[in-house]
Each structure stands twice: as C-alpha cells, then as structure tokens.
Image (cartoon, rainbow, N blue to C red; front, top):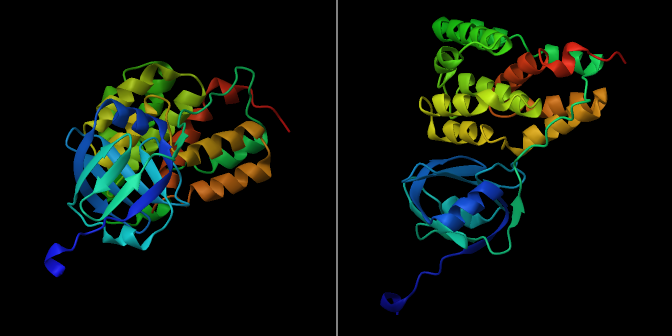
Length: 289
C-alpha cells in the first residue's frame, strides 16, 4: 500500500575528496544547507562556516570538494536542502546520500619550487601577457569605479610586497571587489597567494587569507583560507607543474586551460600570479632559452 511505502534514498559513491575536508569531517560532523546549485556542482555551507562543494567529474578537485560521477539523482538536489555529513558520507535532504567509504583522498598542498629554479625567458614572455589587469573589455563597462579600485589595489599590493610594507590596506581594498561567486579582487589575491607559496615567501599568506575572507563570499573565503595554508585547487597544480617543466608548448596549453575557468576567474587569478612571480627571485635572473 502507498501508505506503507518507504522512500529509498539513492546512494552515490564519491570518487575523490579533498584531504582537508576529510580530516575536518573526521574531527567534527557537519550540519548545513545547500546554498547554490550550478550545472556541474553545488555548494553547501555549514552552520559553522565550513564549505563543501559537490562536483561532477571532470570538474577539478579542490581542498573542500567531493567529486562524483554524473547521476540523474544529482538533479534532485535543491537549494536550501538540509545537509548532514561525517567521514562516512554526506546526506543531502532526502534526495541523495554520497558514500565516502571508497573515495580517494586528494592532496591539495602544492609542491614549492626548488631554490635552484629560474624562470626561462620563454615562460616569462607567456606570463607577462596577463599582467595587464583588468582586461580592456572591463574598461567599457559602466562600473569604472570598480575597475579603478582593482587597478589601484593591485598596484598598491604589489608595491607593498616588493618593499616589505604593510599589505593590510591594499588587501582590504581588493577583497570582495567585483561580482560573482569569486569576485575579481579575490581571484587576483588568490593568484598572488599561489605565487607566494610556490616561491616560499609565505610570511604574508595568513594575513592575506584572514583579511580577505572577512569581506567576501563564503565560497571565495574558503579558497582564500585554503590558499593561506598552501592548499589550492587542481588547476593550480597543473599550472605550477607546467611552469616548472619550462616547456613553452606545455605552459601555453595550461595557460589556455587556466584562463577558461569561470567567467573571468582564471584570467583574474593569473594576473595576480604573473605580476608577483615575475618580480620574485625566481625570475630576477631569467634564464635565456
């Protein structure tokens, strides 16, 4: 009889889970809700501020993501659904249960460049093309005020980093600046953080992460706080490896893939990364090909 029927919740198996997220779920169970649903992923915000991204392959891995294979049941996830999670699995309302039992643990901490590494001229030439920021098309928008603030904030931050000045004011001016899930100012900051980490200039990371995370979206804050620990999404790992191998063809391909991330997130992040790394000790003595 219908009155005695039992709803069976579909069980999906996770393929990958970010190591920091798994450790967090093992230490403390998670209670939250779905805050955003998109074509290939959804974001879940915990009552304690933690973030979980459920993503469908081949979306890249991140410090706080869980990757699953596409299933029709993924479309049953709705905004504001309650979510409970621990190290064994994630229950999204009465829609799905994602088992973490057989998930591979992915390590988001990037390997830093060795002290002997020097950027080749061919690599520097590819990166310098992206230091002009924001893109010119932004100039034609009605929001020239935001554009001017981005340019000024970026200039001030780079100046402070090079000269060892306080970065607080510059970081505050960039944090949360721009539209979208990860505003342009945040993406630029994350790019700088990636360069700082790779070049072992880690003194400013915690300060940038903390200041910026207080002024932006929950998703962007999660990326920035992870970056403060040297933990970055998979596409950053690919870019770093391409730079390290110093093959122009490989780097060009990786840059091409990188700038496709989001509406402009890839370009914004690459601008911050390129501007900083080209002024670092790794490129001051650029090696000619």
